[in-house]
Length: 596
Image (cartoon, rainbow, N blue to C red):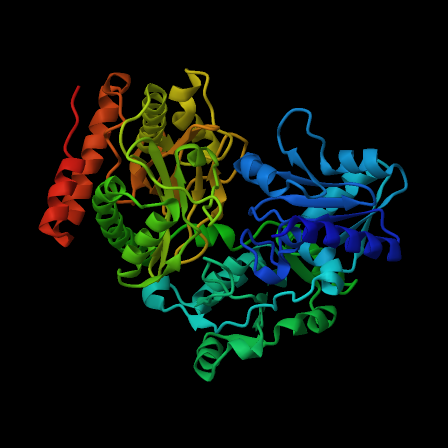
C-alpha cells in the first residue's frame, strides 16, 4: 500500500475528529463479533495504519499516531509502518507505555478519546474507560469514521450459509440449543446473545466462507427458553437451509434486525459474554432487563470434542499427513534443482492438500520462512519479500487446512542443506521442549499454564526463551485458534479437559539468522484413574515426520529419543500404505529410529 495513502487517511481522520470534538481515535483489530480473523469490511485498523497483522491497536491524535502490537509482529510492523505517521509500540516490552499512558502524555487532562462501540467489546470498553479516566481522559462511543472516509469499503460478506451435517458435527443443533437452555436455567437467566461467529456456527451447525480461512457466517444468535433466532442476511439463505434450520427450532431474521429487536426483546434477564458482545449491543437492551455479565456458555462445550468430532480429527490428520509426506518427499530435490521460493513451496503444499478428500481450504495463510524470515514469528511471504530457497539453512513451514471433518495446524522446520552449529543447537532445544510437553501426564483440573514450563525448560537452562504461547485449541472445521484453554506462560485458568485439542509448538527465533518451531496438534486424553484422582495425557493427532538431520543426539535424553522413535513408527505405520513406493521408501528413512 502506498505510504502517502496512509498519510492522507490520517489527515482525513483528523478532520473527522475536529468535526466531532475528539482529541484521539482508537482502532482495535476486532469486528462486531470480536473475532480474531476479521472480514475485510471491518479491517479499519489495517485501513488507517497499513499494518496487516492479526493483532494490534492503532491510535491517532491531532499531532501523532502509534500502533501497539505483540512480539509476533515486531519485525513485520516495523517494516510496514516505515514512512507512515505511526510509531511502533512494542507490547510487553519494558518502557512501552500503555495506550492510556501514551494518550495522557499526548493530549492531557480533559481530552476526549473516540472509539467505535461496534468493534469494542463491553469488557474492553470498560477497561479502557477506567484507564483513561485514571489519566483524566473521557472515552466517547463515536461514529465509525471509516463509514464516511473509507472509499470503496468492502461490503459485509454475503456468501451462502451451508449446513454442517450431523455426520461431522456429532450432535444436532436442536440438542445443542436444549443443552444451552439448561445452562441458562442453572444460571437463573432467561436469554443469551451469542456473538462470536465460531460459537454461532457450532451452535446452529452451519458453516460459510465469510471470514478468510475460517468457515464462518456473519451472524448472531438470540436464545431464550421459547425460541432461538439466527440473525443473518436473507441473501445468504436458500430454502433448503432455511427449512433445515427451522426443523431444528431456529428462526431466521435479517442480520440488521437485531438492532430493532433487542430493545423490545421482552425478557427480564440476559446473560452476555462481555468479552465478545460489543458495547453498542449492550446499550440496546431495555433498561428493565437485568444484564448478567459472564463468560461464554458455549466455549467450553465447543472445545471438548465429541467422539464424532475426534474421529473426524483423526481422519483429517491422516489425509493431511499424506499431503505433508508427499510435499516433504518433493521438497529437497526441488530446492536442489533450483528456482523454488517461499511462495512456490507454499503453493505446492496447498495443491497437495487440495487433492485430499473433504478439503475446504487453508486454515490460515501459510508461514514459509526461509533463513532470517523464519525468525519473524507470523511471517507471510509476498511478492516483495519472497526469496529463493537454497540448499542450506532452515525453512520454517507453519501451515494447516480446513477439512469438513477437522481442522489441521502443523509446523515443521526443515534442513535444506548444511547448517550452522547454532541452528542445530536451537533445533534440538525446540525438539526437546516439544517432546517433553508431549510426554507430560498431569492431574485433571490442571491448566495449560501449569504445563508450559515443560516446553521451555531445556531452553531456559541455556538462557533462551520465546514470547508467544506454546499451544492453543483447534476447532472442528472451525477456527484454527480456539479457546478457552491455552498453554502459555501468562496465567490462563481454563482447565485442560479430556476431548480438547491443543497445539504443542515451542520455538526459538534469532533475528537476522533463523527460526525454529515444531508443532503437532494434540488431543487431551485419559491416562489413568488412581488414588490421587484422574490423570490426563496428550496424544499427537498430527501424522508427519519430524526432521532428524539437525538433531544433536548428545543433547537428547534417552526417553526423548524413545518418544520420537515411537512417534515416527506410528507415522510410518498409519501413512505408508497410502503412498507410492518411492514415497514409502523416503518415509521409511525419514522415520527410521535414532540411537546414540
